[in-house]
Amino acid sequence: MKAGEIDIVALDGETLVFVEVKSRQSDSFGEPAEAVDAKKRKKYGLVARAYLQRSGDEDRECRFDVIEVKDGRVNHIKNAFFI
Image (cartoon, rainbow, N blue to C red; front, side, top):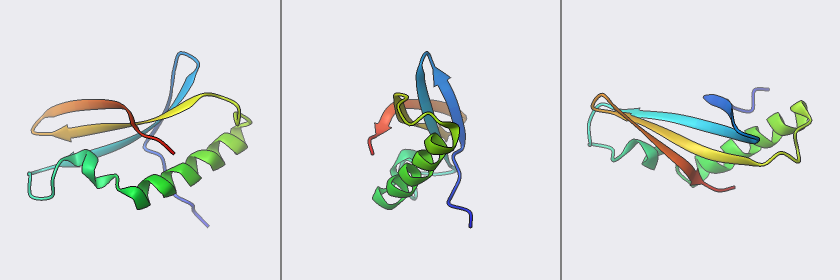
């Protein structure tokens, strides 16, 4: 069973960064980062924990970022949410 996916996993120094990429064509549904609601954050946390367990990095510092893409611009939100 597939638990979910993480768009980008990267290192920022010693910090493991889980990144969700969201894009919008218009303002009809709000800003891209608003799509990362409580339900999605919970699922993202479960997938991240599974990743940390499989990689043996349970003790590594990590954070959750969101990259918004809208109107040809990119906005990187560090520490966008906490689990």
